[in-house]
Structure formats: C-alpha cells, structure tokens
Image 1 (cartoon, rainbow, N blue to C red):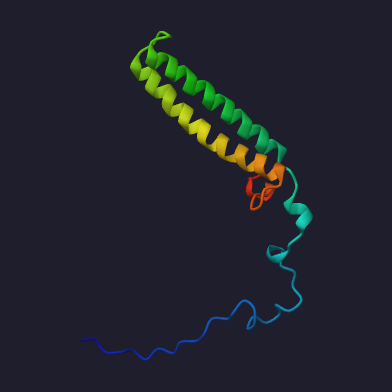
Image 2: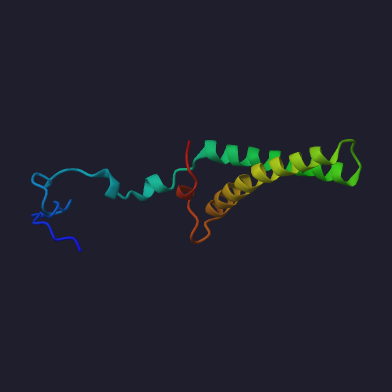
Length: 116
C-alpha cells in the first residue's frame, strides 16, 4: 500500500461569499425581466416555417417517387425522405412552440425559441 502524503489542502473560494470584492458587482445572469421574455423572434419563426414547408415538399416528392407517380429511383426517394425528415422535424417543433405561445397556452413562451 502506498503511504499518505502530507498535503495541506485549502478550500476554494465560494463565488457568493468568500470572494473578496464580490459585493456590489452586477451579474446579468440573474436578471429577470418579463418583457424581454415575450419578444417575438420573427427570424426564427420564418426559418421554422421555411423548414416546415421545405420538409413537407421533400416528403411529398419522396412519397410520389415511392408510389411510382413520378419518375425516379428508389435511392433518390430514400435521400429525399431523409432530407425531408431532417427539415420537417425542427420546423414542426419550433412552429408548434410559436403557435402555442401566440395562443397563450400554459407552459409555452416565445423565449423557448432560439433567436438568431
């Protein structure tokens, strides 16, 4: 077995109490202003609608190729289906949050949508 070394440990300063000079400093992380939480992120909503429409279009194209109503190979349909799913899901998710926030549903706020 190895022997214990004699090392003197000291406590690290706590951010709230032990830091000298921390009193009176402004920390914006803990600010809460209800007005800033209700700003509508228009760019994000437009992007979400674009992704939703593009995803629907790609999914419809892949469906038409799978059923034979449109010319193309099955590998093209799988590619369109994959791209359609990748664009449809985030567009639907953010559009749903924006819609329920606009309707005033409990638990939904525009602050849940990332703004660009």
